Image 1 (cartoon, helix red, strand yellow):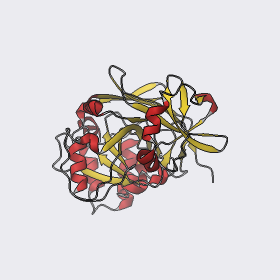
Image 2 (cartoon, helix red, strand yellow):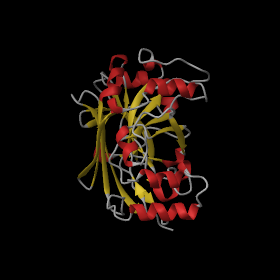
Image 3 (cartoon, one colour):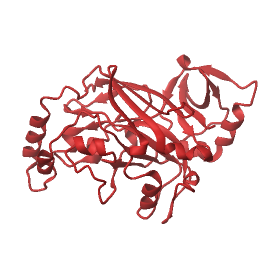
Image 4 (cartoon, helix red, strand yellow):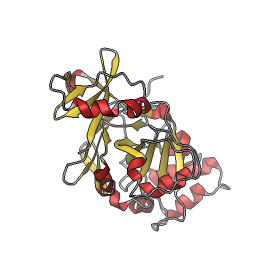
Length: 322
């Protein structure tokens, strides 16, 4: 069975711990980054659960921090579920290429942190995603398969790829529209996988609620480009490091809904930016699903039998103050 790990703050000090039932077994080691923890702290985490006199603490006593830490590459897959492609006005077939983009690591925040909406953003959207945390450096082309995936993926996290649609789409700025500070709540747990749990990556249930209303519900079996083939492709392009985060894409149920004709216009480089903005805003006027200040987003990812559970992520949207 894998190990759920948390990073947390108490009395102005940041610690790592292992979750056991409703308590956290506090680790003695001080690991500055996730990479440090993965390189030198995993053995301590494994031993902690067997230590009878280990220091323990309850969740109300601490503030959760993102288990993914800066510096980290955040590599994202776009439109990687059929249901999301359909509502975004894209072809529902598996595309001939894997859509890849990045997200700034300064967008990382904790599983119960507030999501701060920039004043100019009106179309704020949510995207629940399974995050893969790398456990090994990659510096050249590799052939990664389901059989050796455990050598490269250390664990899993819940991530919410919060998106400012009125920046992302009219401007064609995916990095910009998805990288505002607090736009990547992550955690609460980093679930360290055992080798025999790796197949479960392909059968995890994802659910997201806004103010108690279920908006997204799917299963990772529906991913179009799977983790092993995505990592193989990325290895041919770029270096990756221990502690980097791969976001595997979101499913249907986001606020954004576009007809294919509108999406074609928005993606057309010859259509002026102001016209794209007008088309987008007009097409979304009837939607009541975009996030508003005060909304509470709840996310869960776990296996059907509960053996893998990445915890509960719950964030509230607030207006960014000048």
